[in-house]
Amino acid sequence: MDEIRDDRRNFLNWLIGGGLVAFLGSVFYPVYRYVIPPPSGEANVSQVKLPFKLKELQEDEKKSRIFKFGRNVGIILITPENELKAFNAVCTHLDCTVQYRKDLSIIWCACHNGRYDLEGRNISGPPPRPLTAYTVHLDNATGDIFVAEAKG
Ligand code: FES
Image 1 (spheres, rainbow, N blue to C red):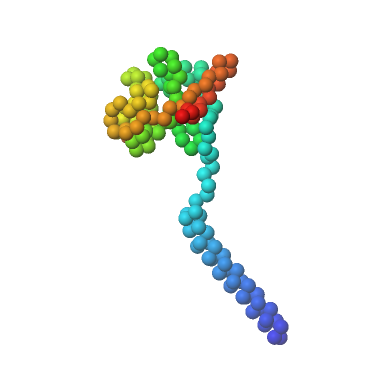
Image 2: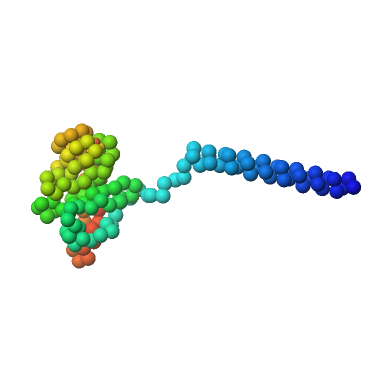
């Protein structure tokens, strides 16, 4: 009889202990995940192949596209002189994404009317620094476009 009682007691101890562990896990695991976020899935890169070809960019009405550059975003555009230029697309003022204004031949930030020339220099508005320029390599045979960090 005592043996059955001990078995029941052991079973209840395990049940209560397991429930307590599960409860503490459900409370502290989300706190742990919040305090220590997982590592970013995006790697730092120094060169990317753009997911579109030159012909698509030429046919684009805006003559520009935004692309992912590792953790950043970049902008590539075709100037009125038919040159390919690429920059980090993050405005140096408060990190909005810039866009190409073909009609004004500038790179424009809509957030606070920041303006950059087609060399990436900040020419008016609040941006304190120029955009970071990337180098562009075009594979003439395939039309593939490669963008790389400029060697400083
Ligand atoms: S964030 Fe671009 S001008 Fe302010």
